[in-house]
Length: 251
Length: 169
Image 1 (cartoon, rainbow over the protein chains, first blue to last red):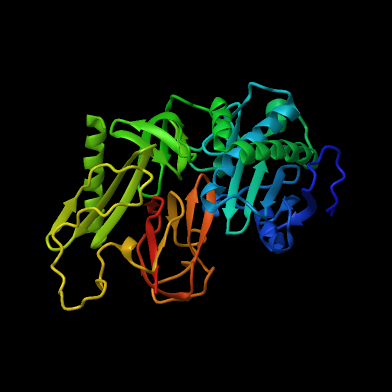
Image 2 (cartoon, rainbow over the protein chains, first blue to last red):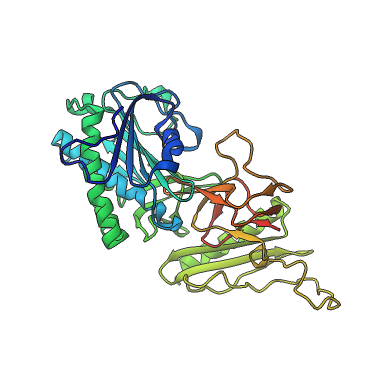
């Protein structure tokens, strides 16, 4: 385990914890949070109880990337969710940087990174109050089989098989920490507007028809934009709908 | 507002009224933000027989305005203090409101037991529920200690900024 960031270019003042195995980096972040006074990345080579949104499992073979970024002192609760887009942009830049491929990656609302149209990475944020934990999972070497995801969900893909790039989790982290620090500084200094613009410029299916599945309803409409709170704006025959949470399916 | 939006608003109010009946609620308040300075605040209440009221669009920056409460039973004027049973949970002094727009989850994850139930005593800071927005799971803490006397929202509900979630007395 290393807690001493010696990596060249690693953002000053940010912690770096590397674990071989843990239940989930989000859970580890919750345990360590009380003693953290500065931002910290926690990476694990193996997660034994990795989790996705609302109790979904997240497959995590060795070689894939799993890390959680803890911000001990995030913006007010209402703005915490905007970090979804900040991290998505950092992840996008990291994927481009480690593969040299500028045209292969896109973003799916709110924070999935797609590679050749398949799902490469996912981000889940936990805001228990007083801190924000941003969990990031990337299929560097292996993607779950198509039968392990829900019907209608995007095909899972891995970086190695799609691009030929073999990237170690710790190398990936060193780049992601730097790109995140850059976007985070921009967010703090300039607010959500530049984050929103940058996100929209890499968005998949902008102007096309999407379906958002919410607990109570399904909304199908043309993906128009993001609003100033980061909500997905769909134009439906009944008018514009703003979506804050839901699963997005491409039509 | 365009004709289209108007139709959508009418459909929205009808859907709320249906929700009210189906869940045997007496009142439901919702604010929808469409964008800058363009919001719709609706309160539908049911007081034998079901009634629906629709206020005109309100500026987004304002807190949920009091929609005209349809035929409320005339309260007894005997008690001079604040009405004991305000129809709108947002008016209740013990109301805990949503700090953000999102989807409500009453359990930490599907299949788990709820964070709290009516009758529970909570300490300040205890998690009451989760509001999900942009894949961020926001745990909403109890702003003060007390007893949960009412849970206004149901699991999976979409809530707006400032919407009442629970009453703690």
